[in-house]
Each structure stands twice: as C-alpha cells, then as structure tokens.
Image: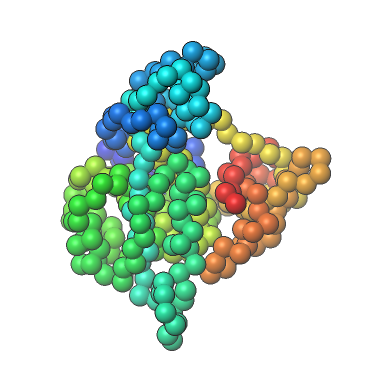
Length: 301
C-alpha cells in the first residue's frame, strides 16, 4: 500500500514506479541545508546557485547535482564552499536470525552476501554508507537500535522483521510507501521517523533488495535534497515477451551489437552472482514486449 496524508491509501497494485516516485517527492521532508567545502561536495545537491564562470546554464543552479567535473570548475573559479543538501548518509542494518556475517555457518544459517557490498549500490544513488550492523529478528532490539543517536539521514533496513509496521506505528513514524507494484521488491517500505530520518525497508533477498534500491533510492535522494531529477536512461528490448499482470518487472539486461538490450536470465539466488553479466535493470511495466523502449537502471560494477 502507499499511504499519503493528502490522498489516503492507494492499493499497491495501482502504484507503479512513477506514482511512487511522485509520492516520495511530495511527502518526504527535505534535509537541512549546510555549507560544505566544494572539494567534498561531490554527490550533494546545490541549495543555492554557485557561479563557476564556465558551467553551462542550469548546471550550477539550485537543485543541480554536484559532479566531480563541476567541483573542478568551481575550484578553478576560486570557490571554496557551497551551500548544499547532502550527500546523504545511511546506516545499513541487516536483520535475520539466520544471517551470519563472520565465523563458520551453523545449521540453517546463510552467509551475509549483501551487507558488505551495499555501500557500492548506495554510492550509485549518491548515498554514503556510515556502517553496517547485524540485528536478530526482534522488534525490541530494533526499537532500541532506532533510539540510538545517529548523524545519518537514512536507515536502510534489509530483511525487515514482521513486526516492523507495528513498531513504526508505535514510534509515531509516517509511513509513505508500504509496498510497490514491482517484482522483485514489492515489499519495499519507506517511512519518515519522528526525528526526520527516512527508513527504507528492503526485502531480504539480495537481488530484490538491490533492484528496489536502484528503483526508488534516487527518488528518495531527489526528494530529501530537492534535486532536479536526472535524465532517464532508455533502451530498446529485443527479446522480452509481453509482460502480463499488474506489477512492473525489473529484469537484468545487457547491451548487444546494434544497441539493443537483451535479458541475461534469472537472477534469483542467495547472492548477486546473477547480476555479474548485467549492465542494467530494465523496468518492464505491464504490456511491455519485444521492441519496447524501456527505462534502464544502470548497475554499478
């Protein structure tokens, strides 16, 4: 479900990515403005226009993303600081009694194959990871952890416990997205905690977690930093059958000679090995078929 104080509750099956992204933009409270040294501002969003003398029109306006090239131009213009929002910082929490980070595996346990690489996928969304924590499936433990002071603007919670929604209600959090009509990643949740932090709840399956992060993570950054959305990457599919059902599918693809994109096969594993040959995830709404022009979510490598 998607919850909004303005429009009430909308069934998740009616909320594709475009609607969820729009809801995040309208309902998330942006982070505070701060001054940062220009040299440390890559990945932040300009809150006040900054003149570099050489940047093309619009590149240095409020709402623009600060790139490495922009930093170079700003330094060349003798700019020392910039008024920005971000870069956003995230505390990453892996939950699950069966997940083991170190040491030999016991009966029924599985290795944490996602937590150590989450910083790479977060960085692709302009989110810096502050650290990685492992918690057992316990609402009491999560409640205590969330009560600890943090300088991060985000909590990325992978494999959220069953009691998460009740806990968020107890804490007075504002649930903005409770389920998205995508596969995988349909259980994705976004809430704003009373202290202003945003909690992004991702599925436990590594592929589903990464797919959901790449699909909604940039929209969260845009909303929290008042960033103008970047250009969408598009590609034409050469091998997709018509997508039936009401959910948008996220499928690993690779570009082939001639510029067309083809699926790389199933990636439903307990690790991310299925993403090794992928260059992007194709966003396939219902009705998508061979020859369709679709949105592509680049995969960091």
